[in-house]
Length: 89
Image 1 (cartoon, rainbow, N blue to C red):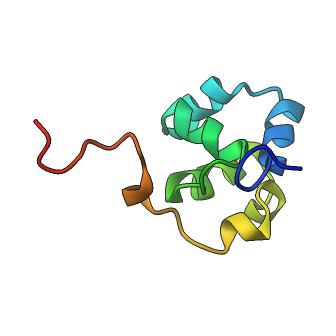
Image 2 (cartoon, rainbow, N blue to C red; image 1 turned 90 degrees about the horizontal axis):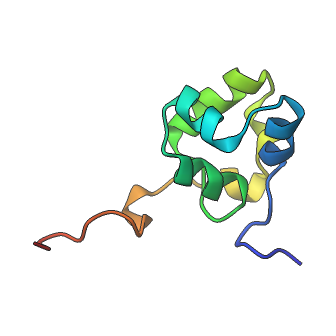
């Protein structure tokens, strides 16, 4: 049974296999560490940058890094709980 929404993604093992830590990979591809961590753990869908850059970094197709269920919809940044609330001071 998955602990997160979509379960651990194959990207996590691919990062380990290529000896990339999540912080290092996030820095290289230019995304926040928390986003990459949440993506490979199956908590959130991958952003366009992750979809584009992670396969390049690891040398594997996007479909080998994430399940079909995760890739079926685009990342929706408005669902990001870390974004400041509109009108908040």
